[in-house]
Amino acid sequence: MASRVTVVIATRNRRDELAHTLRRLRALPDRPEIIVVDNGSADGTAEAVRREFPGVRVLALRRNLGAVARNLGVEEARTPYVAFSDDDSWWEPGALDTAAGLFDAHPRLGLIAGRPLVGDERRPDPIAGRMADSPLPPDDRLPGPAVLGFLGCAAIVRRAAYLEVGGYSEVLFFVGEERLLAYDLAAAGWGLSYVSSVVAVHRPSPVRDTPERRRGLEMRNEVLTAWLRRPVPLALARSLRLAGRSVTSPAARSAWPSALVRLPAALRDRRRLPEPVERHARLLESVERHARSLETV
Image (cartoon, rainbow, N blue to C red):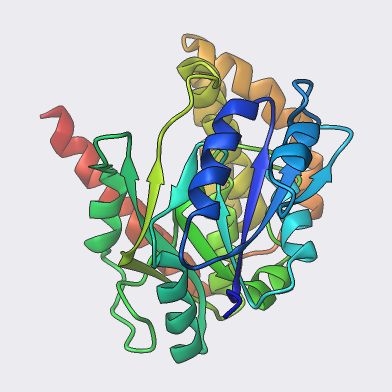
């Protein structure tokens, strides 16, 4: 039987890692369709995939669209469910079929946050423990703990739900973009659930941004996400905090002007979260702050 799940991969200049991932995905008994969206690579990625993996569909973009490239892959998918892989991650055998069955059984389910394992040693990613212990109220309409966030390379969506909310935002471009999508799905009435039996493996590529640059993008997008969906006092407080940190932090120093450039676009797309979703967002942030305070003791 043909799979009811399509795997969408957005990639840029990681031809070798992508080839390894595609071999893993092609070997799955789930037999998913695969769509690669090439974000303007300069290393011959699109040509190599077409040559070495003729069953894989390739969308070759002229420029780097960041996370929005995944939206194009979802639009092209012909299945009711779409799993995301990075070019350095893949799904364990049976994970996609398990996810499809859960979506069938839970009509309100919009996103499954899978259990990510890291490296050849398959170490549990700490995010899995946090999702398993989610403080959000239990929801018997979901197959696991309710969550309001996920790891992009270990997520499977109901295609209709994803397209309904518009997918990933152009404003954020890349890094930390998952939180806004989680907010939008929840605001539209879709459930997000962590499911430990849906497993993805992530073998981080050595070709990646420096930690400082990545941290700067995280800071920028935290502020922009606040302006996009959260109350004005909260968004203003986070903006002022970032501005203050830019005096001493190189990461914040790069994040602050970048946030200002993108702020008009964020304000044009601003929509306040419904009050129940805002309460859940604040609850999660409170728990995260408490956990960080314990780490510093």
